[in-house]
Length: 337
Image (tube, rainbow, N blue to C red; front, side, top):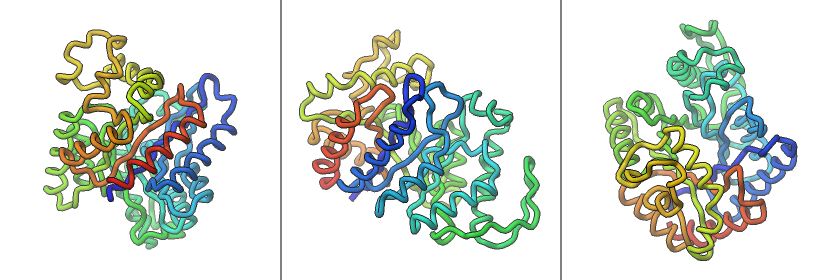
């Protein structure tokens, strides 16, 4: 069976005044995911946002781990340049111990300037800081004293305890959507996370580049396919509930995040980007049968090892509908993968 993880919305628009309620909703979503067959529940990271975007993915992974018993928990992605690697190694190890080895650590180099501003980290250092972080995490999780010639930290004769529950530490997945990032994932990562917004031909090209780099560096490829998903009892129901997803995708398109392809060649303005355009070889959308067909197509074309779905956006759907969507997917799609 192809494992499917869940990527929740961790924002509380418009002004972040109901964060406690949002966390309660996330716990309920995670427990529902576990009940209906999802494999994992993952947290992303941003800082200084007016909607109180939850900024602590390792902490949230640990919280969800304590409210569940089987489902994996993790980050996707943690902004590696913003951390002292020794503290990060300790925190991830504790969560891995607390969850009996259910932790997955997915890292990215970050891209939003205000995330770096919050910590006084120069954005130009992000790639090298991330590579150092990966190397230091792996050294730290051996449980043996070590030193590391860091450009940014003093790490001399340091020993991290406790060691993680998993031998060698949790898997380290890396995001990367440009040639340098794909090379880094192939050279250093235990897995690569696909860009969640690009179309099938673009992702297929990225996957081929990543697998070639992994092979070059003697690593076994592991592809994590991220997608936005809109599921419903009918196509009309999906169209009717597609508004929040389209707000997100029009935002990406407006700010130039979409790679130009044949699907959007006639889209001159973000407002021309329709749900029907996005649904074609980009979203997972429709009835359970349609979602299954699309996932099988992605499986045939990309051969992912893991799928991660985002089914709720900052604008909705509301919690009751989000839980119903999780159940619908878990009960009617996952068993057939």
